[in-house]
Amino acid sequence: KLTFLKEKIPLGTIGSLSLIKKKNIKENILIINCDVMFKMDLESFYNFHKQNKYDITIVVSDKNFEIPYGVCSISKKGKIKKINEKPKYDLLVNIGLYIINKKIIGLIPKNKRMDFNELLNKSLKKRLKIGVFPISEKGWFDTGQWSELNKLNF
Image (cartoon, rainbow, N blue to C red; front, side):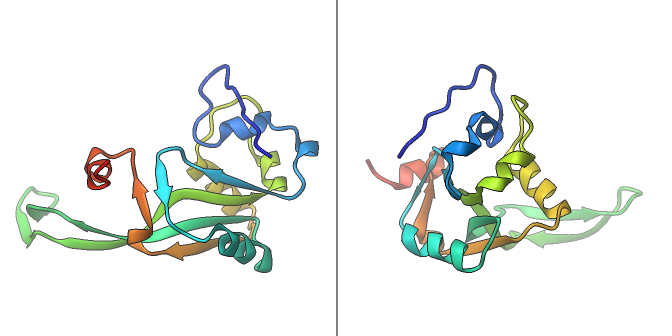
């Protein structure tokens, strides 16, 4: 069953969930950012969340970044310490796909702006159980970035 929420004011990436009536939610909520496409088994993702009894499960992926320039490190006095030529970074990134337990909605302030990272930090402070579900870098696309969208060749 799908439920659509209409914000009267922009509430951020997670704030609109404060508009949901808790009684209409049985247990868990699947949240997908609208600018993400993915290839993955949602049933495995859901089972992973349930089996581990997570309060929040976040889908993550390796992402490789290469800076096409020499990156300079400078001292406080403005002198060059070193140059790292075209550094590469391998990072684990949040792809914008989550499952949250319905009790998490109580952490979202009513009709106030809140982004997912703020909810996550609040949940971490409360020592809630948060897990990550890793997928391949090739298993998702960020259509909110022109460079990524152009790779899809529509």
